[in-house]
Length: 91
Image 1 (cartoon, rainbow, N blue to C red):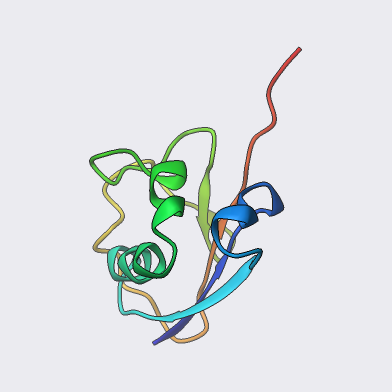
Image 2 (cartoon, rainbow, N blue to C red; image 1 turned 135 degrees about the vertical axis):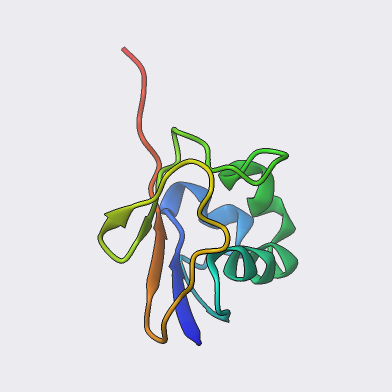
């Protein structure tokens, strides 16, 4: 399955400036493995040591917000879009 992964501009410096990356994967976990193999510095910025998504970098599959954990085995379909966003904070 060809899947698009969209990286926020704020993290593109860890993906050689790319914000749109295509991978072949049948599950979210496999897509992340492919992404992190290509761009290992993204891993610690998108997931914790247990591969759970950080709450301040939410992940979406197409238009559905993904849970912070328990989604790695979720099946993907050709043309799916996995998007990460960075939530701004401050005061």
